[in-house]
Length: 207
Image (cartoon, rainbow, N blue to C red; front, side, top):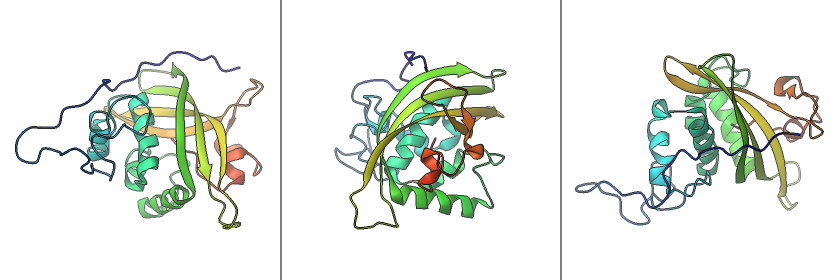
């Protein structure tokens, strides 16, 4: 079984303060990616979007840690922002197929079918050195099947273990795997059979 370990939320809790003076955000004003700056951040950190994932969506190179990257990528799915996913996926990732345009189009197609509903971080662990880290999380999601458009969207949950790498001081998503529920060794996402949960729905691994 996957050990549930407490993970510190990176964003400060409570209401973030908008910049004063010209250009200060007004209550309810849309943020960088269409999420109101004074709305709760989609990642579930209990902070407001403007004080949590919002600044990272505006400047992907500033994401300071693997957990912040995981949370901001989750929020990017909620905001339907494929460019942030492309910006924060390492080009050597098996998921990053073809050109940036091709990959971003594939992410956009996944976003059109998937709505993230809840994120629960289960555990985190270091990698081979300080430039590699792993985070295991539980995702609740709503999925629309394009082959059955009249059917109600399906809601399910999936556990994913993502690997993050730091290159020249910047964190990227590298790849992910899906731990078996009985605690067996996880299989790499790329090696999964077509019947594996994310693949059978034609969706990319997420974060």
